[in-house]
Image 1: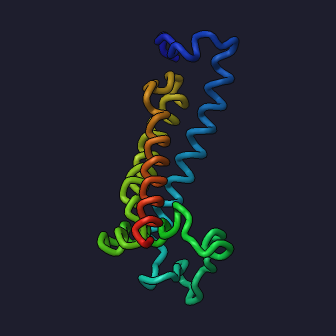
Image 2: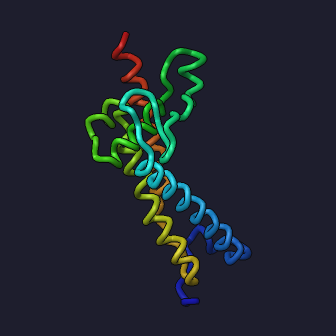
Length: 158
């Protein structure tokens, strides 16, 4: 292991090595989920309306939005699966139609792959993970964008 100093957050921990092992697992989990999401969006297909299909299947997946089924209104994430599929297939206009916030969220998910791969690699090789104090603001900003998009979508039909 290099003799580099631990990030300020880890410097006060009693056993930073245990923290690094837990951190390594967390990065691997995020890396796996982001990779699976992007891979599925490449492999899946949509009919351009409501249906989403797994590769090799002719039956559509069931609608999973409880808000739409129970309340009759779309949730903030409605259309994201179809939009991700469209983005992965280069159908950007269709993606925009399904959910305007999908481009920001797709980019956020895609960026998770190199970020967590680098972090995992650094920890695995005995280095401290990169520390950027504003990294936790990004998911909050994405959530705010999704919420604003949802409110705008709901109010434009009033």
